[in-house]
Structures are given as structure tokens and as C-alpha cells.
Length: 308
Image (tube, rainbow, N blue to C red; front, side, top):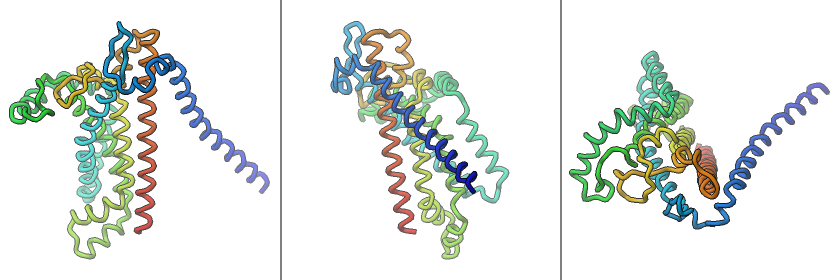
């Protein structure tokens, strides 16, 4: 008994140390980023977040175009990728229950897409996706809906829209895999109860399965958003890398992670400090998004338990 208690104590200490190590790592990373970005923080202050100029030769730096580009591309990716990923997950987990071999094979193919390196997605975007989007999507949208600011620009392919599409394709496997696992974990009693009341397949999915699994689906949504937010190489290759703030989706843009990848290697002095402040902003925004998502997920889960 004493040995067991001693073992429990040792295990508790080890687990606590592991948890503290993770917390310490996050704090150390934030502290180091703040330290190296301090010259830029002290020089520009809060105005750095709202500055629109990025002129290296004049030591004028502002992060707003890069924050804007990150938000726009991530929003496009989520708006397109989330419904598709949820549809794929529902199709595999609910509609292919009687065809397990085909469902497993399709799920495996979707999962394998998550293992493709981002640079491969970027090359595919440059040589395959962008020409197709430019010819069959962007130009028709510009021709028929060019009076709308979103589609008023010149559709050349390397722009916010293309970057958002590439990101959507990249995050679909992650969100689909998580959603599928959550849907498979829904007890069959939930479905059987609805079927016994005469519900159709769609009604069972809509009113029983999806509400029961919504907290897990939301978790997959956040994972996809996190990947879209921090993705670098694929975006660098298709977005055009010009810092602009415009409502036109066919305009070239820039993101936080793309700027770091493109310019950090040749930076020094205040220029380097400004790029590292960009990294600090990206770190802070990702952390805030995840904290908010955890809080929302907790509230949703608690509300579901109360209703059940």
C-alpha cells in the first residue's frame, strides 16, 4: 500500500512537471519574442498594429496589411472548407454505415491529404489551381459581378481569393477527420430513438446526431482555423506578397506568416525587430483564438449536458 501511494505521488509529480513544462515553454516563447521585438515595440507603440506602411529604407513599419491579409484568407478558407469538411464527415459516418469498406477507404484518402506538405499544395496551386480559377471562376465573377467591390479587381490569380481556396483545401482533411471521429462516437441510441419516432435519415442527422456532436465539430473547426491562420509556404506561393488593404478579393496581399518566411533572413536592426513583433502578434492572436475557442467549447458542452 505504501509503495502504491509512493508511486501515485511520483506519477502526480511527473504529470504536474509535464504540465508546468508546457506552460513554461509558452511563457518562455512569449518572453523571448517580446525581448527581441522590444525595439520595435518601444519605437512604434500601439501604432504598429494600425500602421499601413512597410518601408524598409525609411524604417517605417506597420502590421495592419499583414493582419488584414491573414484574416481575409483565413475567413475565405473557413467559409469554403468547413461546410465541405462537415459534409464529407456526415457522408462517411452516416450515409456509408452499410458500406464500411468503401467508407473506410474514402476516410483514409481524406486523412492522407493532411499529410501532404504545404509546399506541394503551393506548387499545385501555382501550376494547376490558379490557372483554373483565373479562367473559370475569377474572370466570370469579374465579368458578371464586377460592380461589387469584392470582385472589381483584375483577376490575375495571385491574390486573396486563390490563397483562401488553397487554405480551404488544406484544412478540409483536418476538420473532416475530427468531425468524422466525433460523429462515429455518437451513441446509436440517439439515432434509434429518432427512428422509432418515424424520423427520416436527414432528420436524424440534423436533429439528433449533429447537436450531440457539435462541441467536437466545433473543436475541428478551431483546428482548421488554427492551421489556416499559421500556414506559410503555400500562401507565400499564391497570394502575391504585396501588403494591401482592400475589399477586392482579386488583389494581391500578404499575411503575417508569409512576411516572416520571406523577409526574416535578410533583416537586421529595427527591421528585424519589426518582423519579430509580427511573430509576436501572430503568436498572441493564435493564443487568444484558441483560448476563446476553449471557452466557447466549454460553454457549449455544459449547455448540452444541462439539456440532456
